[in-house]
Amino acid sequence: MLKLVGGTGFDAAPPRVAIIIPARFASTRFPGKPLAPLRGADGAAKTLVQRSWEAACLVGGVAEIWIATDDLRIANESRQFGARVVQTPSSCRNGTERCWSAVCEAGIDADIIVNLQGDSPLTPPLAIELMIDTLRSEPRLSVVTPMIHCSALQLDRLTSEARLGRVGGTTVVFDANWNALYFSKRVIPHVPERCQDAPVYLHLGAYAFRRDALAFYADAPPSSLELMEGLEQLRFLHQGIPVRMVEVPCPPGGMWEVNNPSDIVLVEAALAERHLA
Image (cartoon, rainbow, N blue to C red; front, top):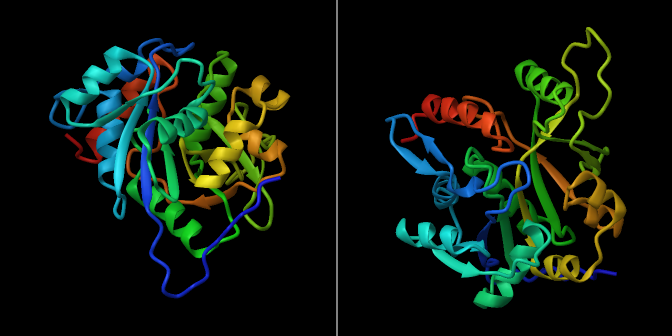
């Protein structure tokens, strides 16, 4: 079982933070996704992996940012726009395993590792900073991840995508202590018709881990629910490790991930509304 070690001394140095962006070419739903071009507010196109890296660069208090990939095309593109790149094995089963591989391969000595998934360029800096601050202030926590309360528009989008047999996003339910109970690619909980202000929360594609929690995850086998849902974070719940949820306000333009090619138009509209070039 994971044993957490939290500093309590007043003279302890602040934890060192690294952001790792896992990016793979062989996406089942959208092959080559990290290299897909997205146009910003000025009409200029940048690849999805570059926009994810630029989102990471806006986060304060971070010592280093890496892109972790097993693909030479993504590595070359990332180096061209100035990112630090670490080559990781193709055997990594998900982004969290790839993050631990990157820590080992690059010798990253951070105390807190942030996994900013490469299909979430709209993740606001506040979400990542809030995760980091939560781990810093609560030494017994080991995993934190953000969510937003779905607007009526976002909920309609999720249910419409589900009817078409596509995944529009991941939802989460949590307990009174804000610890996750379950994540699903289906809309949870069940929302009755004519329900006003449904308690549906969209999980954002980012995690903050303590180093020992990330190492523990990499050594643990995948759970059956993780494999069925295709959601890596369910491995922590299966192992009895709490995953703390933090709520952030929905940013302008909404919060959309690039799960399918059709999501690009939504992300581009949000980039325009936020005036991001």
